[in-house]
Amino acid sequence: MSLKGVYTALSGAIAQTQKLDTIANNIANVNTPGFKRDDVTFQEYLTANEKEQQVMNVPRVPASIESFYDMQGGDKSYVDLKGTFTDHSQGSLRPTGNKFDIAIDGKGFFEVMTPQGVRLTRAGNFTMDGNGRLVTKEGFPVLRAGAGGEDPENRVFTFTDSSQVQLGDGGEVFQGQENLGQLSVVEVADPDALIKVGNSMYGFKQNMNAEVTNVARPSLKQGFLEMSNVNIVKEMTDMITANRVFESTQKAISTYDQMADKVVNVIGKTGF
Image (tube, rainbow, N blue to C red):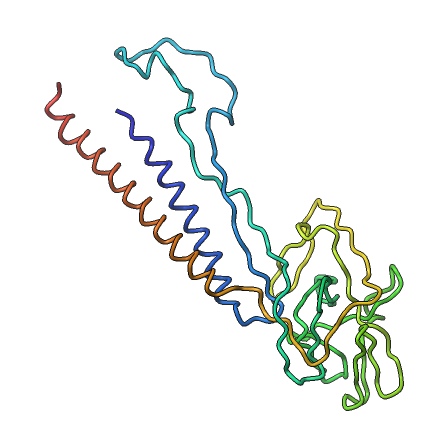
């Protein structure tokens, strides 16, 4: 009697645990500006389709159905994590009245300079640091649009009088009557090339050719923040569903455990 089906149930339990972790992270960031929800997808892993054909061996056990009709794992399937993807749909815009809060209305990302290089973000809750620079809440400088190959250090906004700072609808930054440049807003041709690196910022996945282009005339809203695109009702519904599936896999594992106990302690002792 084969009890290998317990591994199928176990793989299902692990898959639902991963899904619950993702949902929990989405819910935790429901009020994080610029946060984009994640989701996971799974696929069926068929052992017979994932290995080379084997030569049939002469059975070395008492004759049985299994020994003459070797399925080579074709009767066993497992739940396999196919991948995690980010939903980049637009979040709602919330008015704040803070002139350093800037929301992107449409596609695009702000460019930010970090110690690890230039990163992208949708979170526009900016401020001015002690050196008069326009920075993110973590203190990373926000960059202005520049020519290709220009050093990011030369694309940092620096103000001398924060009370005179204004922003145009196309991303132009003014200090009084002086135009200091345009906020750098870029668009990524393939959003799947992006990877989250923390603090609502994105880097680029290795071995992926990420095509980045400048948005010539971005649609920006000063005094607004783009909020998370997490739908709390949907996330709670998905969490309840995942919990119920997880409980079902636990019951299956428990049933296989009881069957194994009977095979060893009942049938094994009494014989046939």
